Amino acid sequence: MLDRLRGGHPIHSLKPVINADAVIKMQEFVEKVFVHEEVKGYLLRIVHATRNNFKLMLGGSPRASIALYRTSQAYAALEGRNYVIPDDVKRLAVPVLSHRIILKPEYRLRKETTRTVIEESLSTIEVPSNIGAYQPKVD
Image (cartoon, one colour):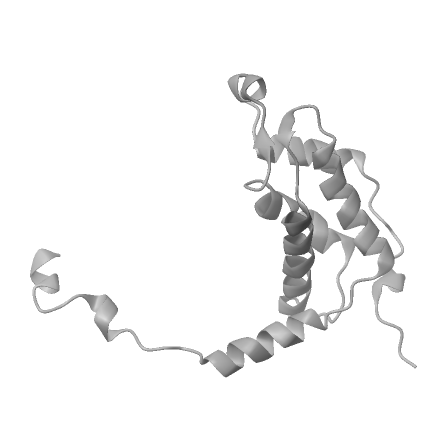
C-alpha cells in the first residue's frame, strides 16, 4: 500500500461524475415530488412523537421534519414515483431522525437507543392506508 502511494495519492486522479447543473436539476426534480396531506400529517405525527417522548431530552426539530420530508421525496423519486407513500416516510424515519434526537442518560444506561425509541413511536402511530389517494391529481 505504501509503495502504491509513493507516486501520489489516488484522490488526485478522481474525476467528477456529475456537474453542478445536473445536481441542481435533480434537486428541483425531487422538490416536485408530490406529498399528500395525509402523508404530511403522518410525517409530522412521527416527529411530534419524538418531542413528547419521556425517554428523550430532545426530540425532532422543525429541521428534522424538513429533512424527513425531503428524503422521503428523494426516496420516492429513486423508486420511480412522483409521489411519496407512507412507507417511504416510515422506512426513512430511523436513519433521518436517530441522530437528530437526544436520549436521556438514564435510558442510555438501560441500553436504549434512539433507534429503539423511534421504532417504538412508529409502532404506535397509525399508518395512512389509502394508497391510491397519495398520487397527485391529474386534471
